[in-house]
Image (cartoon, rainbow, N blue to C red):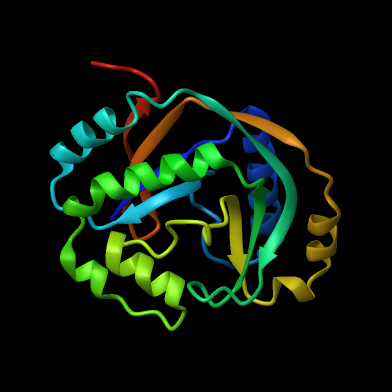
Length: 199
């Protein structure tokens, strides 16, 4: 699997890592706890890695850097994909971010392994997106966020109340995308591509 991510700035990264460490310290088991702090733009099985870099470089060459706002903490309760409560820092809806995702997803469609497009979803928006792009969250139904972890029954824990009360209002400049290879829980950084750089 290949993941195309946004990375948090130092301040935001600090908050995410603090919460990951807090869960580990309390021996709370969950998914994503050991994953590097990031926001996912796109994940798919890509056939041609060399072509992937060239396509991405070309795709974002005209895309100028921009800012996003991280405006609150939230939870995907009983997350369909993890079976737990996924806790995250919400990214305020941003037209440039949606456009960046759409542009990348459109350009990578031909490189996505066709088998992965056959995954079925009951939700029509997710199903259509999976069929078209090989990733179920492309478009206006995507909720951009920085994940902390996914923990079973987190909303019943005391930490949930503390997490939800956190006041967050951070700006994060987006000036690059980062490509990672994902093998289970292991993440290997392959490349960083800066926005607006023409070769």
